[in-house]
Image (cartoon, rainbow, N blue to C red; front, side, top):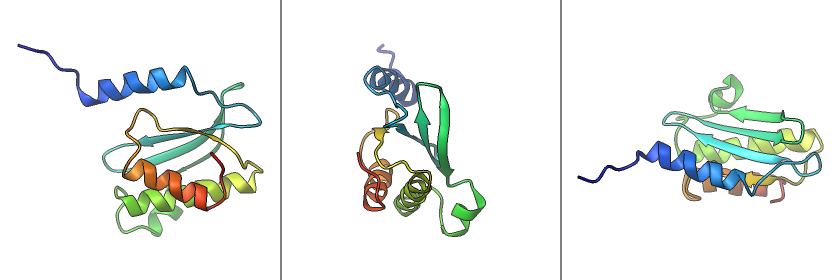
Length: 122
């Protein structure tokens, strides 16, 4: 019988491989995305010092108040605009996109596209 890795283990391994190539600097921090079954989280991180510069998620009250559901593509797109606005307020214009081992489609793609439209460059 063939033993098969769980999807979460596969995603963690993909993310580990991605992180060998991606690193956020002070000039160009990393936009990290995490997606759970119920919520989405986005952080902009400076990896040289290990600080989170900006964060947003569908758990926050002000974001959740604008959403009907927190786990669909519309919620991801709204989160992308929120994180981009917060980043631009802090003076961050360019980032490196870290999809967290998730496939670049659906919610992850919606978040990235919305962040680009709101003014972030990556």
